Length: 575
Image (cartoon, rainbow, N blue to C red; front, top):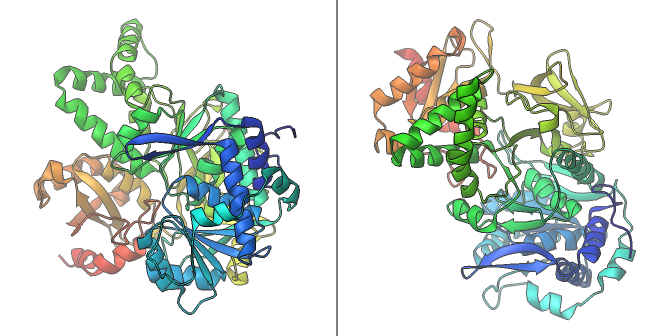
């Protein structure tokens, strides 16, 4: 049997998986909950299904380099489809389940995908509508679709008709690290998505670097990642799928955000990869639950936060710290399954106050940083390097980061994309002299840790020429219990204004204006004069994926919000 390579050191992603699967045999690999019960598919069985899908795709005419659209919620078939497409020599084109027919039409037309794999009848109908008049000639349905659906093939039938040997597939997987693995379309916080050309080496570079960090600071063994973010997002694709494959870890697919708490308790993960918005939601739920339990738990929480902020602990505080370990923190760790080594935050800046909340409760928070164009991981905090929640930690191993004269973060390494699909002008603008120009602004501290201040394009410049980072102000606003979401504006204006989504449980269905004003006043007290929010309006509804105001990875689509509320925000300056 071929020796298992070090994580990320294989020639390609398929080879990494097949060698790991041969070594792991029938051990559990992919977990999902069906009919109220968690069941797993073993490594060896997963490899057989990957081999069968690769053979089936070739029988449908897939040629090396052909693109295949993949539209599915997180489930074992997503992972098998991704690996099967690449094993057949194809290129995975993941798309979000929240995409409209127009969104799918753009991705299909731009990528030239010739096949599509879709999970449910509802998603199949949307994809078929978007595929009209395009190059997509066949659709593979994971769940049965209505009889008579044109050019549709049932997943189970295809796999049954094309059994294949994973060992033979391993011999055939001769593509290299520079070969294209997937086209991941950026989620479009500012406009039309572009296809990022991620090669096998870019993702494997992320796997190797992240694995090096994990092995330095945490004991490995019986690891299980709970997958929460969409697999179609670059962050989850690399860190939630291919990293656990490299580590030989299990993957459990959460049922939904609403059932996340129960899934954590049931599956007892060792690692979770999440975005800051989920941390904010979890913090609100935990704080509310503690408050409902009475004065003692609330006092313990206040003391945990106080001790976390203290520069050093006296003997009395050390005794209190031990008490917290045996009471409140033990209860929180149990709530997260009791085996959790780390929560890894990425996809957007984490408000340091949110990070301190979880740290005070005894959980390890590792904030990372990256973007789709870089595999996506660029840097990550790690305990051994000293966690500073205001930073995203040192760059990944074998990743170069430097700061340009205007403060922009530049990145160079194997993780950098090979460019945007069919967009040489955008590629030339993004990659210059081998350096990826991230569009983010930051600095490197004395310990080599990267600190992100803002997006270049999001920086607000006042009418006096002062630069203001909106994400810092927005993070302070949403740290208040009365405010669920917020966006600030004020470019070329004399002061900042805000769009606020109230926490309806705190302020009532209409959003109590006095409570919101008090919350804004508290925030302003800790901000500089130019950062203070002078006026605000209340949003008609929350920012959601369904209404198009959040990306599927829960980042604000500022251009959508400004289009909807811009006139009302502008009117705040006329008072």
